[in-house]
Length: 184
Ligand code: SF4
Ligand code: SF4
Image (cartoon, rainbow, N blue to C red; front, top):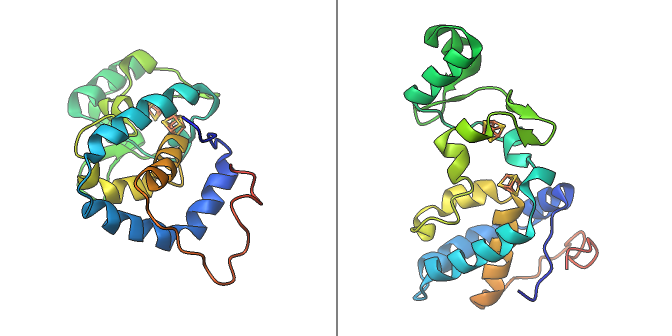
């Protein structure tokens, strides 16, 4: 991988704001692509996930609230020595899709930058950020939502733009360039 990897969360968040329109255009571009996007994404995922240490980041555990399955709630309630109902009332809520998710940010299981229940963490946490899964172009809305939060997704999308020859448009009044941020 030629490109350097950006892990500065403040820079990523700032660039995400600047590139909001560009990323919406990239979503349309990807949907029309005749390339095997999953194959490229899986390769990039392997390269980028190897280069990033999630234990130095933990931003998903600070910024997102993962979905939890009933059997996971049962296990976590048992761990706390409280009933499932108590656990749900205290720590869970229905998300916008009607699924049960943790309600606290940062996650109550985050200890420094490490998950204190790593071995039994929810399935959703194990799968995040889903860039290793097939069907990337069907999850682009989710990827755009993860882009400001997760360095793996941010770097993957940026490198993907270059690899697929996506034309970035210069914005008039652009407050600063990528080079100014020292991103690459
Ligand atoms: S359960 Fe662990 S991996 Fe999942 S959000 Fe909480 S701290 Fe992060
Ligand atoms: S999955 Fe993404 S947001 Fe979560 S710790 Fe790893 S790099 Fe950071």
